[in-house]
Image (cartoon, rainbow, N blue to C red; front, side, top):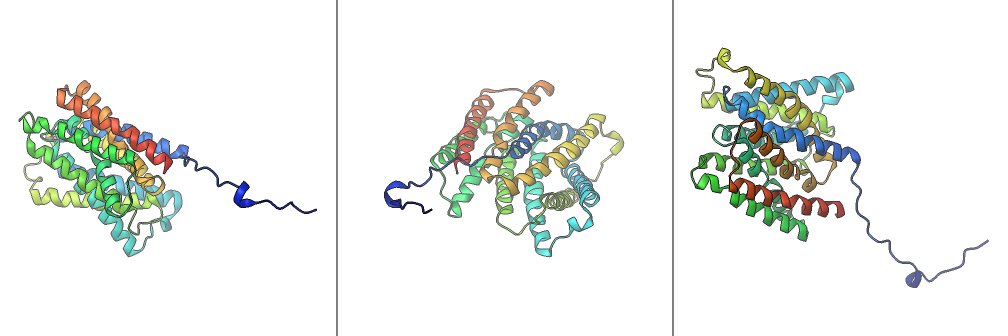
Length: 314
């Protein structure tokens, strides 16, 4: 039996484009990053009340990285930690950009900037990511362009507390520089030869970034006059929370997302974190909600819908 011939040019139409389905595991990992990282700004603010910024950040990331490496060796065998020298160097570079440059500067800034404002300033990260991708030849969508413009407009409004003298301008500048370094690290991780196992990559990134923070802390002389007996119990508790939840769980989820999900979608955590951070800062630390913070936060959060909807169709 033969199949009748058809005029393919006239009768067969190309399939309509369909939106790429995002797996449920991606949304779970995003949820962890959204909520847990939103709470870490509060944790950082409490830690630096009685602990030095870079030494505490270094202790946090080195401890979390070693714990993660131990878990990997226990669950998958020591061979899972083996990487090439090039992959190890790449993971170290990304770890330094993300954790020394990105997170370390935020920790330092939070000695003079409210946790909610710091989190809102971080919301500009997706704008830098879109611009980085455009610089490497990937044309942004209309929604991405509008999202960038919203993010930059919100950033301009959020800098007003620093310009008006309500907070130290230096702290605001530190956070903005941190967003540039974090965006560069996130972008680079998808362009250089990273370890194939994202959890292994996360462990090496945290160890490298943590050692970098410890080195900067020692250079700054943070060890001088440090009296561990004078550290408050809530600072120790906050540091423990940051190690387990902020680093071991949430950063590992973030590293996995960088290997699995579209980068612009991953970067949307920066729009959700501020909502959590501002709410916790106001409720627990009585941080003021001035009109620039409320208005600027509303502007930058509005951009997440555009970027998410765009990435689901790309």
